[in-house]
Length: 511
Image (cartoon, rainbow, N blue to C red; front, top):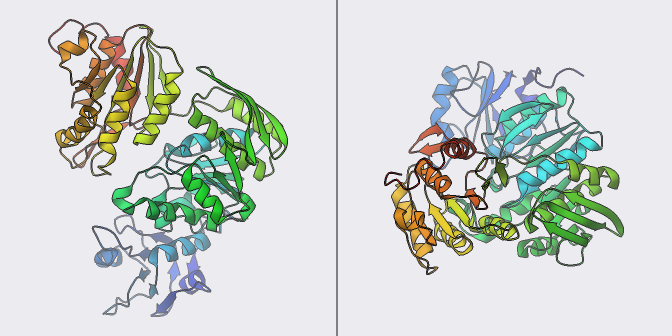
């Protein structure tokens, strides 16, 4: 079979049999696909996508100037563009289906597992990747951290990229030997039909907590977007977390789905469990069969992630021995309770928790680890859901000896305005806002330090042997977005740098 990236098609071949499409102006040879006029090459078919701030139709002249061979529009054109035009009821859906055909239906003959939910997607994909490798598969993975296969990594632009980028990359990985795909599926991707050109064999629902409500409006709409994934698979290939109220609701919609739970009787659950700072050890039950569990992952939420991955692997026909080994051998997930080694005896952890529920779960998980003092540093992103800001600050303050409130990715918002919303949540807990002198003297409470680098320096300067320091919100991200500018910033690098100079500032008036 030739490469699925080298095909040229006639336009009428690409749209034949697809519903909701009307073609005018004859046909044309299509040598590529594009939805960004700046990246379009001569001979590409251009999709004019509807957008929140811009309309793809505005870029039709630029696409034609760059050599577009044909156009896909959402409305009948008012003039003759001189190239064939396809009018689609849903341009995004048409784009996914045309890309599926153009790139040779790259998921038709490989195992595909999709993971959706608010929290736990990334860890679940790392677990599945390890299980599949032990079982003899060559999996490609698409997620928040990166898109990767066989040692090749592409930095992720989105949790789930646009269908053109997604299907093209999958086709490349398949041509290179990938025979399985594990995919984090975001609510935006489901809402915008980015994965409608993918054939899912198994789908996992992890949980649903408030996030992206600035986009979805309310939790019911958010849930409806997530639910679309489970309309794409057969019932017994739906894997659902029954410890989540939305999971229970989803299970009612798909009664034959496989449920997993750490708290109640389910298809996949806990028979025996010892949870400690070293991880998880025990026995899982899988539809009447038993599997020994050993994992370095800490926290109840990671037990749920393990159960979801185990249930999905079992549903895909992987043997229990490979599942158990895969869980035990799964690597550290970047930015998910990732340890930053230091010589000061501080347990320093970086985590991606950026919702109040995720942060609460992380802090609860860490409560089982003995520590002299618990210091949590956290910020909230700008141009995103504002409702979570006071909740995240309150969650941190309630579980910490000292909380440092700082910036995350302020984007185009005023960082101080974001921090004031967080500060209100902290104040409502009844804890005191501290000066730097009070914090250095060992008082409990919270402090606001807007500059994230200075906040990390302050926290590492304050932390002593036996303390636990959690830096939350950015995790694996290696950038900070200030206004519309992206600058390099990695919490792990900043912690290492700050620890290397620890105690230089202790007792100083300048922080």
